[in-house]
Image (tube, rainbow, N blue to C red; front, side, top):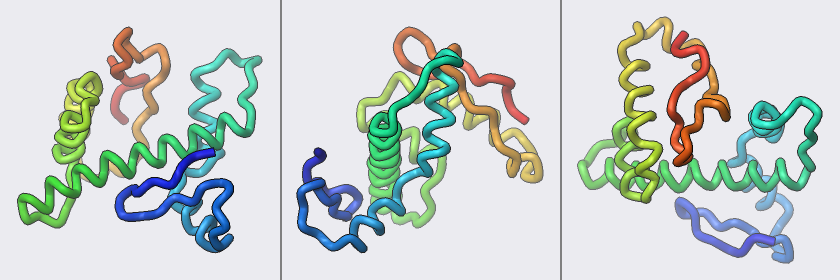
Length: 148
């Protein structure tokens, strides 16, 4: 069970919370689709491996919470600078502030390459980093297939 927490100003219900079912549904709307999470997880595993439902749901909640955590910090940075739009540099700043320094440089390089592409090409999906692209310290060292 996960505990009550404040995240970006929203309340997360505990499993034993007597809260309204509608509130739980609203909270679940914040999560990334479990099918997408499952697909990403399976890419990191041998073909014969399976992922339990509770593992998928745990990762689903965790990555969704992580995104909210980083975005909230980036938003705070924007508010301090009296800006309304969160950009990639704000997210990199937030990652540094929150202690995720190992991820900043590879993501900075990725952002730089992304910004070099014409606007029309940006709308295409980027390839996902693979587990093989992870360096020993956990930072993304490269991206499979590069940019579109």
